[in-house]
Image (cartoon, rainbow, N blue to C red):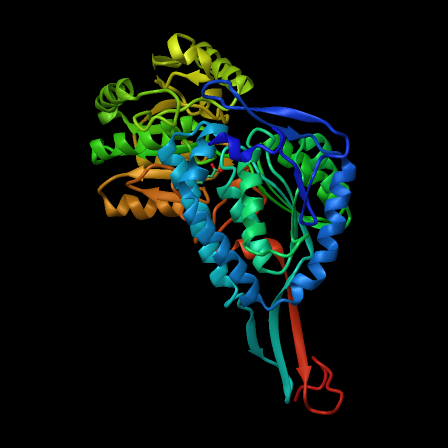
Length: 500
Ligand code: UN1
């Protein structure tokens, strides 16, 4: 399986349709977090490589923008078809480089396939508006124009899905792309670039430059030709990008995580709530921006929920995600593990009660990978750090509450606003919650994960800066609105003046 990805054991950049070594000749290892095996080497590219990619994109974009959008879309249909044919192959590689269990890897690849077909459909829409002019014999409309060259920076936790959320709308709208994938998970980027190549995307329309944020990411910001940066990753890096892009009047779209909560009311179907919490908190080992990390539980069902969660957590099998029976895979790397461990200490010091987990798994086969035991704290207060900060691991804090109002207030008290959920059978509570929960995504009687690609993905406050990935809203990031007025009166008509 891994042989096919190896180009002399080293991945190459994809610039102007050519597979190229990084100009500085530097590489770093890509490690399977489940067993610490080296999979391949990934380039650590230079600013010069970014410049070459940007030049190629600039040249290619001029012609690409002139290809009718329905034809641009056909490339995406072909990309979707190839991804579908290769779904199992891609999923296994994804599990190897990222660690997520194979069932979830298949789900992520499917998310990319869905995005291909959805955005291909946009090739025959890309709707603008026509509207009456205030003057006689004059026509008015708005159209979406490509921005030009766009930069995308994608994370390791959804290395193929998020890449499709950003690159597909950019491409169908007539842009060319410079893409920096996360160095932890470059294999999905390599595979997707190959698929674009096979699907017949003209050279230079997508360019992949592997490397660090501090070199490749910064160089992308420096390039004046790159007019948009679309980034998913940490809040700290996102703020840095936003500041620098702001100075350069560069459009920037950010998605930077969450501190997502499930609310369990006293009338909830508790079995369903337990399933929803388990799936959205411990699935992907908690390494989703949308992962559930807080549960506001009505005090009257708190003990019962604790008991049921503990029973189910004890049944979770933890290990290499290629094994179909495994439910929880590894953490991406050592520093991820250490960060989670540090938060356990913080939680204990703050007075939270640790019910289970809380440790790095270092015995038996777990010693060969980066595994963290699924963890449950209870008697947590909404203002504790473990209930406020993003941990990005399999750690849940149960926060007892007396009412829906209190739960909503605690939900909204964090810096982030990505996803939230409520389990209740009361329709009044459902509608009040969907109105008052200050997050970009709200679920009713489901966990906090599992957004579908044809709806907007993103959030409020520290989660982003007002833009959305996926859905039709993604087109707003990668297009400029152009207002077009056609005067067919044959004389000079002055708006606001020559009106009767
Ligand atoms: C992410 O973690 O950044 O809604 C993406 C979900 C997935 C995407 C998560 N469809 O959980």
